[in-house]
Length: 303
Image 1 (cartoon, one colour):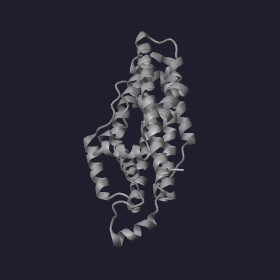
Image 2 (cartoon, rainbow, N blue to C red):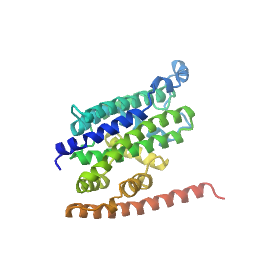
Image 3 (tube, one colour):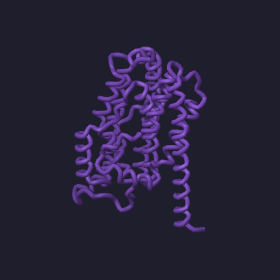
Image 4 (cartoon, rainbow, N blue to C red):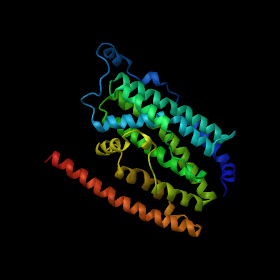
């Protein structure tokens, strides 16, 4: 089905999902979640460059998560190109943009007043990230839906896991607030893909094959992203194993049951077979990663 026709057919479902989202959405204010009293020492001592108790993995996660949110102008441009217009689709894009905008505000204020990352590093990163305008560019409407369904779930998990390693109740609460927003965004796109499966299963399977096998988190344009990703993985915040066990397997097999979808074209059947083999290979790598992590933990904490 052509993109324009698919957008039109899906619009009643988009309106339903948007109304569901608005009914469940929580209004919150970034300034109410920032520990402003921590800023007092900055006036006399200046900004610190990371508290000793903060691991490199946690610091990298905060930096990457924030700079990812900072790139909102280009995500909005892309999502408007794919889904926008004067319709329920456009209303969703605008609401999504408004909600995501709060994330960068509260994260930057929390990080700054807590002295966790040098503000110059944050600003240099923001300038590089937004100036570079590197964002995923899905080739079809279905590709866009599949990508963001995966990405929003990945972001939810990354935010939540970042909160758990901060060892700071305030930071934990900030990241949980963001995680809750991202989960609602994920549910919107997850259920939209489910609806699209009923209309054009072959298109969904082919798009999902492309997105699963080529998936990259939106932070790939961040300076030093590879090193940051390595630190984030080492801290157990987001790695191959998490991506496989908590994102790909639940979505592909349990939520969408792609292995059981019928009525596929020959091209979609091949795409499904290729994707299943890919997921199996990723699973093997993920299991080895878990085994190495468990062995390292056991070595550090012998019985």
